[in-house]
Image (cartoon, rainbow, N blue to C red; front, side):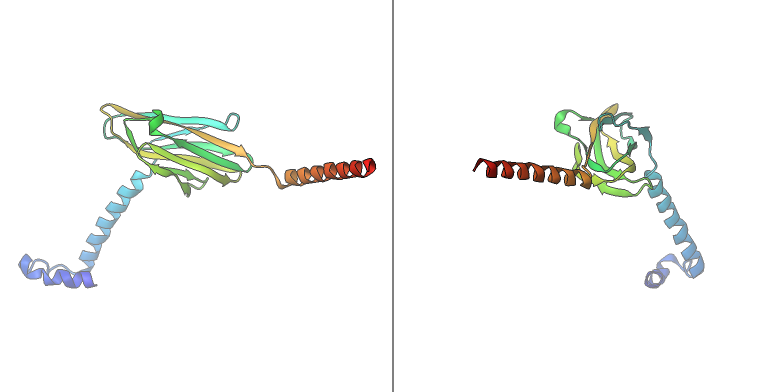
Length: 191
């Protein structure tokens, strides 16, 4: 309402044309303008490239080569984790893995497309490290712009290492207890 009051104060500068507009037309115009801005931001989230990653020995390379100067890209790398584990993923400019591209975001998405965690970094070097994840479908999302004359590229590595189940730790402790008991018994016999 305060916005409308300010606009009415400017009415003398529009030679009365503003006064002919009613509040409903102003609100309708603002709604249409807002919808246009929302449509632009929703369009930016649509992936331009999607591929399935196969975790071989709990690891997989990922990357893309994007053609066209000033091209904006949103790349999705979909993968499945069968059991809980620790996730490490990233790429680094100083290793020659980002060329002619500026990465602006690096995210891990869940099966619903919600961000689980955003990577840390800037420009060419980004990573997600030591993140505990459960089993399920996930997507690595890489967002950026081509800055090279003709194209840009990046390459990275995804690692998911298994986390031992609680039963494994229990068996380890039981085994150590038996070894300690046997050593103590042997020491008593020797004395």
